[in-house]
Length: 102
Image 1 (cartoon, helix red, strand yellow):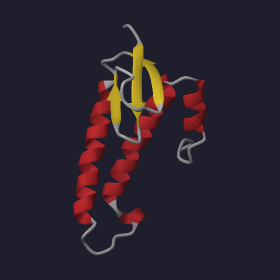
Image 2 (cartoon, one colour):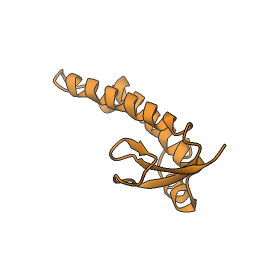
Image 3 (cartoon, rainbow, N blue to C red):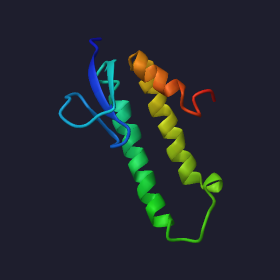
């Protein structure tokens, strides 16, 4: 399979095949595999919308909130993909994240 540049923004939860929008990472990967980012980002947005609704309920500590854990789990997957398909600078960035060793 041919590898193309894929432009990923974790901050904006976007993945594009063109550099037109803002991005933090440029990955070399099969564009079909890049769909995983789209799926993960979509799931994260849905979970965050649920969190916004739940935020109006009585206080639940972060470490006991399942929705936060679900978002964190997907974020770890995103960074694992960035580490796998990113350049050396991206790999070093991901490796310094606090949950990389887990």
